[in-house]
Image 1: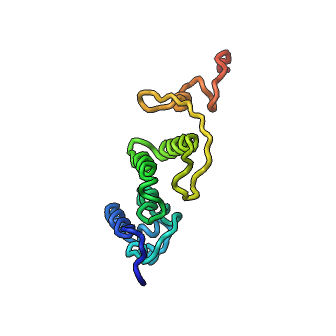
Image 2: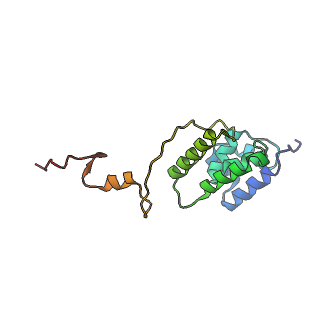
Image 3: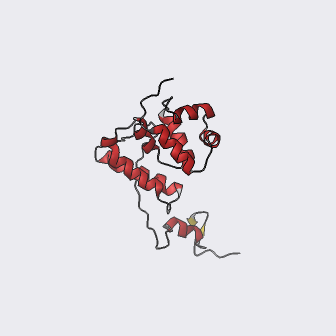
Length: 166
């Protein structure tokens, strides 16, 4: 088989897999693709779909957008700022996965509002109309986190302070 023009995707994937200290078989299992198929991608013999790249990126805990650029799915120049912004958010170790996803949704919402739409074209975006009003305390807890710990709230709603335990 002749090598396909997929940039240095295969080399990059191999490097990321080795940095994650995963065998080819372990990464294939984690990504839900076959071992021979992943080997062919690493050797530049196969061009994976955006969906496969997303699965591999998730298994490696890296930005799928970076893989899309390396595979030629995204235009590196046109989408570099968006990819970098997304990569920074996804790489931030101080945020949990839910917080990262909310930030990405807000970011995408603002891009749409400003007429830029979704630049990734992966088909995984969800149209979101977000109205966020969250106050975060110094310790990183939101008002809803604090409310959950408040003994005056029951089941997520304020208890009637006039009621007394019987």
